[in-house]
Figure (cartoon, helix red, strand yellow):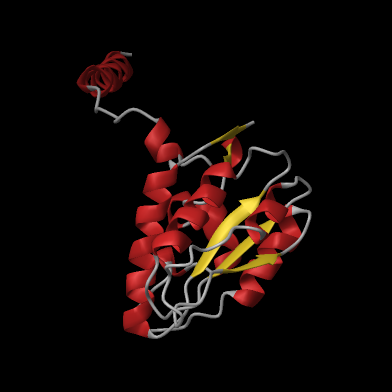
Length: 181
């Protein structure tokens, strides 16, 4: 079972911020499109790549990595840029990584070589584990329920005062019983 963490416009906005940051750090951004097993798994990311590539006017050359056994990774290869794009603005390079998630994560580790001190990875994690541990760092991937951030799914824990008072009362009663007998 899977869920979509972000919409198309949100992914495009986050990736635009990555592009702006890449111009300042001098490193090309890497967009993880995830592993698609069906035709619709990563459709939001594929549309975000096409929308972002249509309006880009920068000189960075981003890399979008997709994998899986579904046909969606192939659709990412065929998006076309409008004729009005500047000639010195390179298109997004789309790379097919692997049909399975483990090899896709290994390819992500190998191809994501950004080491700028100005661009820190979320929680200083290596690229292969970021999708599972920090889903918000890869908005284009479709997360499985196993990687759902549990802090977002739980209610805020309140401190129950009656439990503490009942434990103190029980300890006091046991102490009183021990002293009497």
